[in-house]
Amino acid sequence: MRTIEDLQCALSDFAEERDWNQYHSPKNLAMALAGEVGELIAHFQWMTESESHLAAIYPEENDPIALEMADVMIYLVRLASVMDIDLLEVCEMKMELNAEKYPKIQPTGDGLY
Image (cartoon, rainbow, N blue to C red; front, side, top):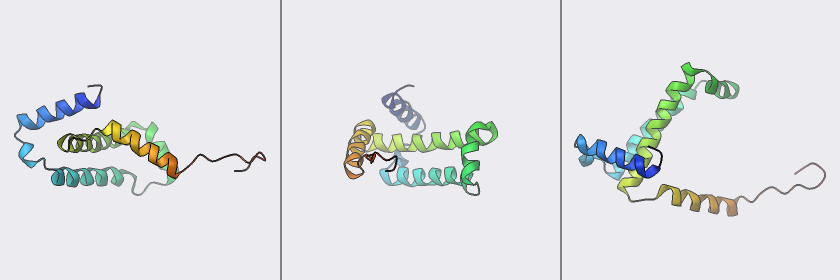
């Protein structure tokens, strides 16, 4: 799998093979997504800022975090698929809106912003 479309197809097939489509309503998928985000957050709950950066280089910390991130992405991609939302398109649109809302910081010439 290398594209979101590939992942959507794989997830759709996975759900269909297990008769899970009956449970994959937008509401249920959003709730499952929130649960997985909570599990991701739990890995960082008691870390300092520095420790959270260091977690990326230690496999014993990084591997479980990566798996939770995969769960988050799986539910998000599945939700988008069920709702017929093109995630890449809407991300591009959201980035454009954010660029308008939060313009680039312009240097003042004195080294300060």
